[in-house]
Length: 418
Image 1 (cartoon, rainbow, N blue to C red):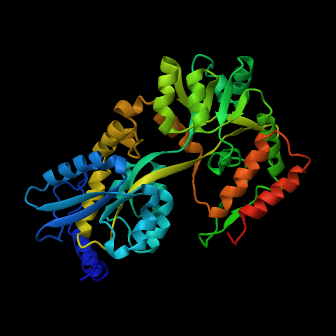
Image 2 (cartoon, rainbow, N blue to C red):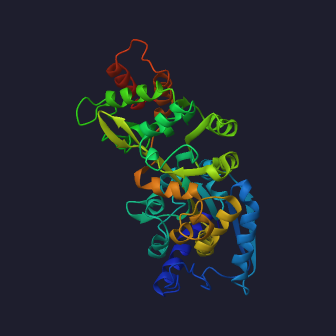
Image 3 (cartoon, rainbow, N blue to C red):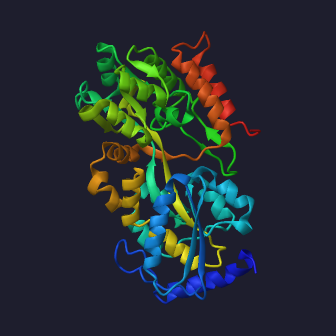
């Protein structure tokens, strides 16, 4: 009997468990400890996919999980699989899919549409534990389909405390003035549409995925409203021409921090250790500043990304898979993940206590999350926005009219044949 043919019995068993009240206890982070699934009998075999770098962490979590059920024989196998590749690998051979897996939030819709993910039974418990953004990322039409795991795939501003006051950090104009006066640079990567979204996200202009799940809608060329598309482009040209600005990727930021030429830059938690080593006690991190656009101060936006855990609804041990996913993503194990892998928790308690609360990068990311959006965008977005960024970073349009540039950009972003 394959996984598809077993699905109905698993679902009926899960429903029976829910009705009988054998789910999570009233504790806000109880992880259903001691609950005995109805899909018992013989050895419980679970395959778990996680990042290769998480192997030791997952092995430790697995041992702790098994210790909670001393009367049950387990065979839990940890297999390396990148979160970014999870969906494609899983759906390519759904009959051989793992029972539990970690994945990036932009894969949720496809996994739910395939039936691999179904609404989480103890959703209210999971929702109460985790941040609003991570819950939204794990939900479709207000139904929770996965267990939030991390909330750290976003960006914010690193800065050197030696140079900036708190007032300087409020505006990009203020930060650039400090950098220019000191012969230093502030970096941002304008070759990536992931970062360039920050100039548009809070302007009233929009970009996003259409209902077909493939093509995009975009009005970045709008000629009406308080802020027009050309206003954003003019603001970017002004930034590019500021002597305190440097268009540069992560390497430019880290190397510049080390050699002293860069005193601030926009990036994410993956560079926190290297930058802290470079700046020592002067290391700091805050949310993104405002920037001047159409005579206004506009809060820079960002894309936010999350990792989550899925429990395979087709698994012959679907209830055990759900229990493991729940346990793997609870407060204690998200804290453990931060301690061992420096990944920011989605769990509210874990994010507000201990070493996590003392991490400038994680706290900056949490502050920036109020101005962040989920990345839901089609493939046609990336290349034209990168080209647009290259033009803007040059500080000149090369004689082209700004409106023509914005019209061309939107035409390419919304192209349906990509």
